[in-house]
Each structure stands twice: as C-alpha cells, then as structure tokens.
Image 1 (cartoon, rainbow, N blue to C red):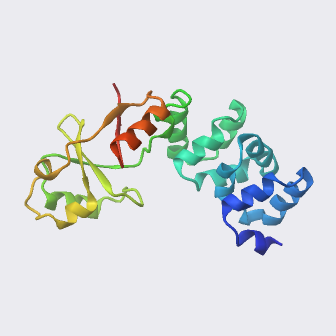
Image 2: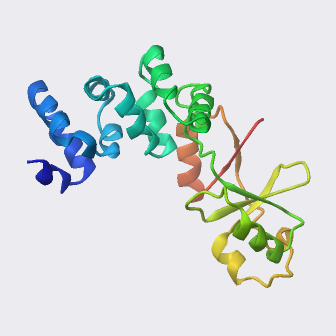
Image 3: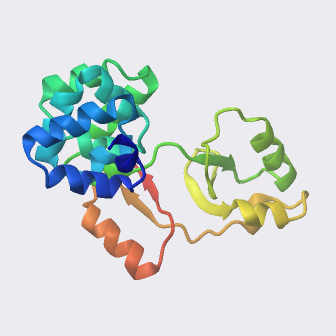
Length: 212
C-alpha cells in the first residue's frame, strides 16, 4: 500500500487524501510515516492542511515545510493560528524563519507574500570576467537561477542579464553595456492579481520587487 502511494504524483496523493474518510486519512499519514512527501501539503486545501498538520505534529511539519519552495511554505503557514505558526517557525533554521516572518509581514494577496528572496545581484560597472569570477567563488548562490539583477552604486536595480548570455559574452565587456535595461519594477504591497496581469500582458519572466 505504501509503495503504491509513493509511486504517484504528490498532487494525486493529495487528491486521494482529500477524498478519503478521516479514518483513512490517518491511516495514509501513519503508513507514509517518514516518507510523507512535503509537496503533498501545499496541494491540499487549507482546511485539510490544518487537519494533516495536527496528525503530523509540529516537529514533523516543520521538517516538511523547510523542504518546500518559499511560496509553498507561505501558502501552507499563512492561514494557521498564530501560535501554531510560531511553534513551527521556532523549529526552522533562523535564516529560514526570518524569511517567512518577513513575507508574513506583508498584506494578504500582496506581491511581498510571493517574492523570492534568493536571487543573484551584480554591479553594473563589473566586467563579464569579474562577474564570472564572483559567481564561481560565491558559496551562497541559489541552487538554481537564470536571471541576474544588475545594480547601480546605490544598489538599485538597473536591469537584468541571463546567465546564458553572460557565458557567451567576451570577458572584457561591461555589464551595463550588455544588460537588458527593460526591467519592470513593482512595490511589495502590489496585489498579486496585478502582478499576474503584468506577467501575462508583457510576457515577463521576472520582475524586481522594490521599496516604493
């Protein structure tokens, strides 16, 4: 039974849980045990998320949530009681807990709740060679990234450049001369529906969230 469950997609496991009786739900959670897939939680509606979190317990829930993308963590945790949020975040790594708390400080349905806080920034006056050296030796880069934000002397976003373009450009070229300066900037309190409109209307892949 356990192996059969683990062979299907987390969203399908979530659907199976959602259509099961409360007794069967407890059996599924108990059967999966340490193999409970983190991605199941954000695939459930929020009422059922709370039910499963009670079954899993605070410690196991914290472990599962830390394995998720930041936006999925927020989706699961934002509607939990404040006391439960605090208990879970107390078990997070300090830097992860602070990131979640910062996101929760923004209004519901705002861009601030959704924005990715792990991104790569470089200075406009750097050359391609300097930038590649920086990327090679920086131990705190995100595991995956494509767009790199280019900043001015005051650390304000000027534009962006794709990693693929950087790798194809001569090392002596300056970033300010090759970056894409058509970078959309929005405030963190903008409604997420407006953000969705911008992405669709202008076929965007990334925007810069700034303090306005």
